[in-house]
Length: 249
Ligand SMILES: O=C[C@H](O)COP(=O)(O)O
Image (cartoon, rainbow, N blue to C red; front, side):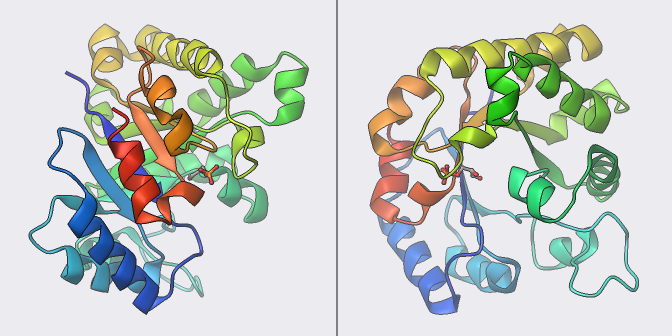
C-alpha cells in the first residue's frame, strides 16, 4: 500500500510566533487520519516546531540542506545538523532552489546521496517549465530530471524517497494542472521508475502533486490513481485550508 501524504512547504514564511500559532492551530484541527501529514518550517524554527508538536502526529521536515557534510559554506545547513534537531525528512530539488539558487541536477544528485547516507528520507521535487509544456517537451524534461539526479541509486534506496511532481507554471500562480494532466504525468513517472528500478519499487513509491493545490481542487486531484498526495505551498499557511486539503482524501 502506498503512503498518502500531504506536506506543507511553508517556504520563507512565518517567524517564530507565527510558526507556534500555526502549529497550535494544526494540533487542534488536523484529524486522526491515515494520511501522513508533514510541515516544513524555515530552518530557524525547526527546533521549536519539534517542541510544539511533541506527541502529535505531524512530522516536521526541512526545506533544503547542503550536499557537503560540514565546512566553510557560510549560511548553509548540513544533513547531520538537521538530524540533530530531530529532522528525518528533507525536501530537495524544489524549483525555487533550482531557479534562484542555481541548484543543478548534478548538485541535486550529490544532495540525494548525502541525505541517504545520513538516513534522511527525501521529498524530491521536479517539474517542467511552461515553455517545455508548450513545446511538448514536458515528458522528456521530467525524465531527464529523474535520470540525472536519481538513476544512479539502487532499488533499495527508494524506500526513502518520495517524489513531488511540481510543474513550475503551476507553482504559486493559481493555475493548477488539471487532474488529467497530473494523472498523465504521474503515470509516466511511475512507468519511468518501474522500467529502471522494477515494478515493486514503482508500486510502493508515493508521488505527490504540487502547484496551486487548494481546498477547492484537492479532492479531484487526489482522486487520480497515481496521485498519492500533495506538496502544498500557499494553502499550507492557513490551518483551515491545509486541513481541508488533508480531508480531501
Ligand atoms: O512546495 C510547494 C509548491 O511550490 C507549491 O506551491 P503553491 O501551492 O503555493 O503553488
